[in-house]
Length: 150
Picture 1 (cartoon, rainbow, N blue to C red):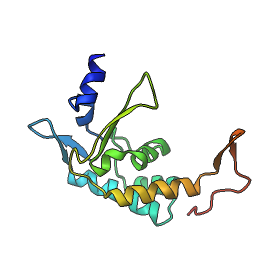
Picture 2 (cartoon, rainbow, N blue to C red):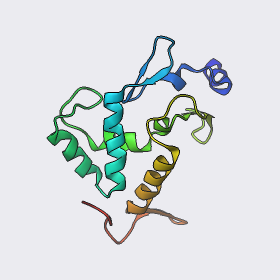
Picture 3 (cartoon, helix red, strand yellow):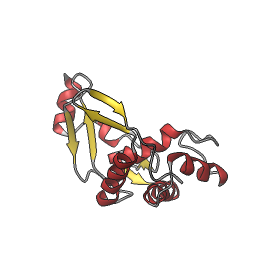
Picture 4 (cartoon, one colour):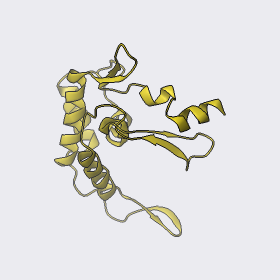
């Protein structure tokens, strides 16, 4: 109950939990790690240019750029997580674990690494490339393969 109230008031520590490209400054606020932020920006750019997640993974690895966990091999999940993480826009949302439909959001919580427009463009692109569709009969695979793979 206390965690829920903290989230509702915007006081939860989860809002300031750093993700790849950020660190906590001396005041405990999120600040941009410019070197890693460039990597995040390139992931978003390459995806919008038509690169697949596997293509982005290969580019990262061929340039010997370390993952957020300081490994050489990037996972598809890591790249997907970066591409869907709203925190890169400066907005933060916390989903209530007891009710996945309820979330608490703070806009412009910190400086964004990418623009909200670029984030939205990536979300639309991901939906367009997906081979999964939701129908009234449930979730099913489309009869066609991914369209813009490189």
